[in-house]
Image 1 (cartoon, rainbow over the protein chains, first blue to last red):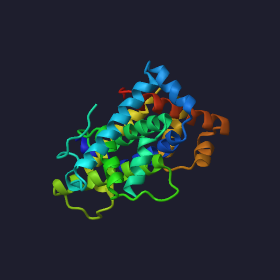
Image 2: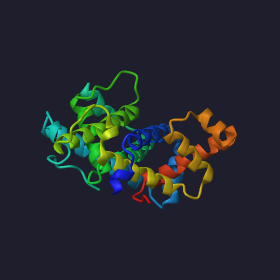
Image 3: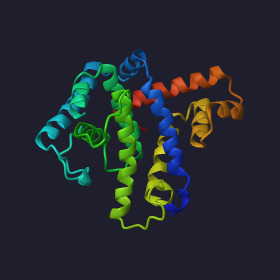
Length: 83
Length: 169
């Protein structure tokens, strides 16, 4: 059984450690590295930023509409921005 | 203050927006499968705006939002656990949740696949998973500082490539 082979007690903290380390790298990524990554994928930096700006604006709009979000229901009850 | 968060969000640099996207996609790897990186980022921003996660003075907004997303991942698994009515011996300990462990195993496998052709990066990843320090990883795998640092740069570039687009192996 797959679940039995995942060795609970080991994998989750290990993943968190790995993600923390990678996140630290991403936080310090240079502008050149960011643009290189987009260029390698044929993506326009402006378009990629626009996606994120739209997401942030959707969150700001939602916060305006509902000053006290129903945090307990995240994420299923709120109309979430989707890509 | 919520208004400070709003003003800072509105003036985030293009580079920080891209970093934020890459980090959200990275953190979403540790979420239940049906939840997306945009759900995660959306919720993090909502909480920052509402002030339910106060933005500490002196902390860059990007690092703050990254921290909120990190804690949201934990929270989501705790909530899932309650919904599943699984007994929690230690509420803050994720280690005895088989669903979370399975999701983590899949995420680790995906990261390993990304670097399957890069032996040094694979060693670094294995070391990081084992909670080894950079020095310990270098010693254990007989890597020079240059080899280690270069591998970390390759990892960062690869994670950026995959974090700024849709493709994950």
